[in-house]
Image (tube, rainbow, N blue to C red):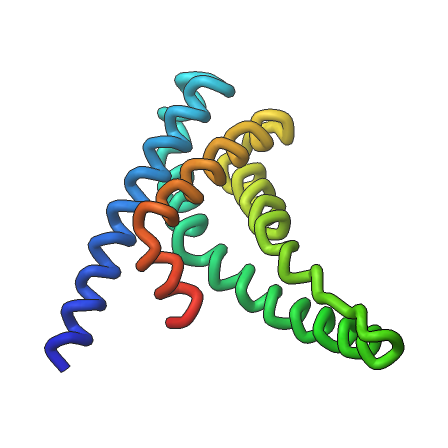
Length: 145
């Protein structure tokens, strides 16, 4: 019981740390790409977007990927039954889905143009993957938790 509390506490600490880092990156990106006033006016929405990108989007993407992997495995099994050469490539689609969802959240929550949202989302995704590489417990908890 004590170890479960400790792992939950560590997850919450890493979640706060990752959200703050992603918030800072998104805030700086909005400040540089759009304007200083837009970043200052929308800092709460940037914080909400950062939290969504760290915690909520991986859960949504994993649910979508579960369905796509079921479909891909069924198609690969069908192909394997014909000539033994089936392979599931739909599992490689997760980063693209994540980026498109992040782009939509950035566009509509922060209220910036598509062009600016594209650059802010790309930078955010790059930093988020760096965070997941440095702190794999975050991604593993969201994936299996």
